[in-house]
Image 1 (cartoon, one colour):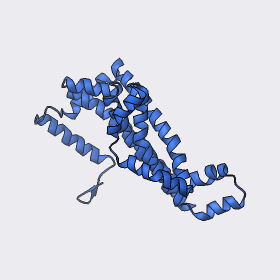
Image 2 (spheres, rainbow, N blue to C red):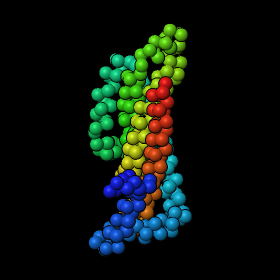
Image 3 (cartoon, rainbow, N blue to C red):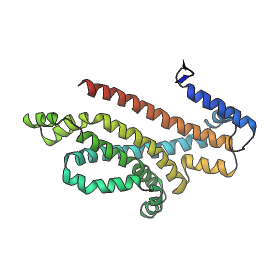
Image 4 (cartoon, rainbow, N blue to C red):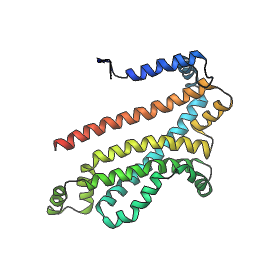
Length: 250
């Protein structure tokens, strides 16, 4: 980051926004935005409470389970769509529809089909993440150098061997990009599920704090959520850069 030709150290933008947040909170212009220092102090107060730890476990469980199903279903589906034209023509319109559709509107349907428990929340999280993973895996396979596929066939590779040793690894940069974006969408999915389907986890804390105008508590939980999503996204972005470098060198 450069300001007036001066290079600032990494994360400087976050420090600048944190300073602006603190100034705005101290100004008293809005009770909804307390000072950042009060939010951080409140975070250290609530982070060790049983309610917060229970909410963290419930949100983390739904998030990890939803991402697991999105990845384990989305990557093979996208690779198969990239390989098989008939399957691609059958599934691609539906993938595009669900990717662009407001998935929040499907939450009442999921509640009717699967109830008000954790199952519906996990399915909601999966639905938010899976479609971009499918599209990126499909795009990665369609950009594979055809000589790799012809080489696998010439050496008598079975469909499973070609799937696991050629298609997956050749499309890995695009797959990781899709997973990174899918995880960001999964964060939205798990919170929407916990707010609309069953008031549990961080959704319950958001509901409790907003209804009682505990804005420092509300923003403290939101900071934890943002930090989790940002950390996972940055780790995957690093892996994506490493894999892209390897693919270019190859």
